[in-house]
Structure formats: C-alpha cells, structure tokens
Image 1 (cartoon, rainbow, N blue to C red):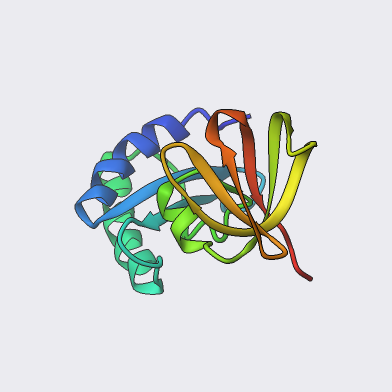
Image 2 (image 1 turned 120 degrees about the vertical axis):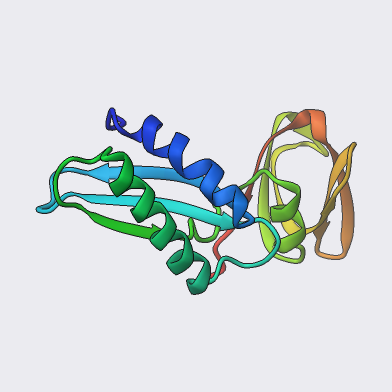
Length: 153
C-alpha cells in the first residue's frame, strides 16, 4: 500500500527533476525504519543516471521537502536509479538493450509459440525484431504482451 504522502512528494519532485533533465520513476516511504526512509527513484532522460544526478537531485529535493514541511519528523532521503528494468517498455530501453537476450510473450501463437526467446534487434512502429540463432523474427507489436530481459547467469 502506498504511503499517503507519496502523491504529494511526487507532485513536488517531478517538476524539480524535469528542470534537471531527470524523470521521477517512483517513490517509497519506509515508515517501519527509525528514522523513516524516503526513497525516490530517478532516471536521466538523456544518459545513464549518474551518482552526480542523484546527489544534485537529493540536495534540491531535500531543501524543497523541508521548506514545504511535507514530512514533519526526521527522515532519511535516498535518491537512486531504478536500475535495469525487467520488462522493456520505452524506446530508450529498446535501444539500450539491443543485442541482449529477451523473452517475448504474445497474446496468440506466433510461429507456433506464445513465448519466444532470442536477442533483441530493434523495435519499430509495427514489430519487435528478434534474432533466434541467426533467424530474424518480426513479431507484430499488436500480438506482444510483454518483452522481458532474460538473465544469462
């Protein structure tokens, strides 16, 4: 269950992040810690999210949270990157993970399967292209339920 302050925190954090070329991906308030921990995940829209991005945003957000007195008691603010996504959804993710192994789930069988695995080639307006042992498959986007990174470990 989301903490009741999260919508207010995200509403404050979003425009601050946008001014820095960042995106607020999510926030969680862990009140079971002493002091409570507010974690805000950000993503750099132009490049990999760096430690400098996190530090800069942390200073700006902390000053704004304190000025607005949204969190009345002591708390710890953590700013981090959401890390590698499990499911690919954005154009940036499809570009970033080109060549990585993925699993594609479809709503109907495609080439006799509802689950296809291979290396991601690209995505365009009509299809996601997958390399399956040297054979290129163009899976129509309207059939795709999800495209998920596959661990190679």
